[in-house]
Length: 316
Image (cartoon, rainbow, N blue to C red; front, side):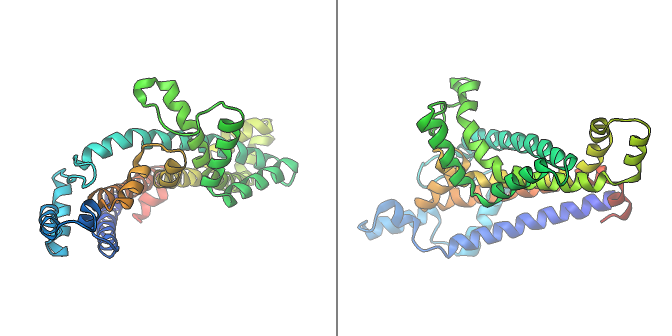
């Protein structure tokens, strides 16, 4: 088990390092200059050069990269060019929205996927199964931002049940805040629920053919009791793995949805930072999202090792 954890941790560190290099190089080759973006094209050349020195843009790329990395290791995320505040404060404020949004979307995904997947497998090759498969195929095909626009048209414009966007803040109360996150969470969950439904259905169908399931039925257990007590628990092993990966995708997928619903979360922050050439914020947010994805995958690997003893036995 220790070898397994060591290998996964080494992969975790190497992935984060590779992600930091890719993020930094990608931003280095982007056209434009943050100093020009802040001062304007008509700025005085001396003011322009002074701002470049202040921002550290006059240093070689290698020095800027290591300065950025050492700062992150010390907990110094730098100062935002646009907002003139520590980036760490921006991240804490925006994560207070993005993480609950991803959690709500994940809960919706799991409830829909397990319920529909189990129902489809129990009614294999029947009308219910075909209906669930059509739903999942539509969910995969429809982009979540377009589905979010449809939700706004239906529940905000025509029915008036929800606001079309914005976030009142947690100070306004738990229900108003959660209500403003419900539509974007549903839009985020649609694609993930469709994928997980198909995985759940396939896993249940594979498990339901096992000998111990036939034995349970022969002992007199009802079909429903067999599905819930024996089939579902064993079928969840691959499903749990996909759930962990999907939560990581939900965190990264908030970038588009938060802009559709005008939510002041991490996704909208990175979008605005790109528009303003606020490279410090862009680098920190993108690397943070990459780190969150890697951390979730690392946790999933560890959880899967505890669920499946074969991984511990072979130290893979």
